[in-house]
Length: 289
Image (cartoon, rainbow, N blue to C red; front, side, top):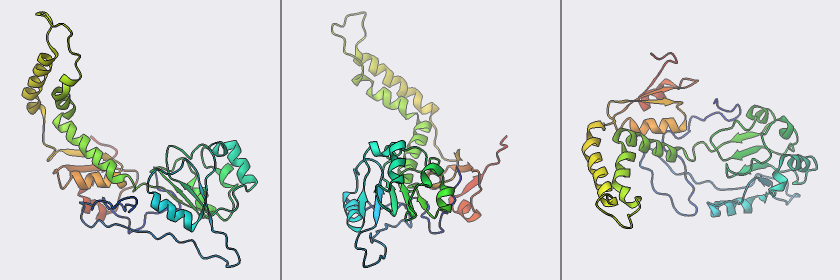
């Protein structure tokens, strides 16, 4: 998926694993990645006409927030936050509300969760053309943007912001765990070690019925004997990445230097040579033999 038309990646984009984290509700743990930094944002409304004392309006689409209440409280103090009901977010009612300017001339749209806030469907010309000209920013959870016509938003003067960096490190960490699990057959080993807790105990074991403890013991011993022979170290193995975006770059930064893997990637657009060099990655041709 290509980058949106109106949100080019700035040169200062933190790569890799230096995603800023909110300081609410508790201070974050320091990142283990070199050159990582924490960013604090002061929420201030834009300059406005002194005769107009109403705060700029932010349209909150979706369920109430669950995390970072302090940050949300600051947002609510700096801006007037309006959250349409679930019924109002259904496409027909949402269109009607936009047509009648039910929420006024709001300045921004805010969708904090991916699971809700999309009840109105795809943001295409049918919806975008109904937005007031005051809208300048559309900020949404989620790494993708296929559900919004970002080209049309940009042409309308609206900057679309996704949250691709927010969960990038967490997803990359999980991917690292799965890679290690593949090389070390962790599902097999963990299942063998915990089998006893999942086997039903026999109510009246006899000579012809093997006890759960015996079955679990044999399973564990078999795994203990065979797993080392089929397990491997990741070092010097090739890891293929389909796409070298925020998540792919962080996976490369973790599994390359720390585990000695050779990283190869394919993407629709080749990354700049300095980035490839810094991550130690190699571009693969689509015609791989």
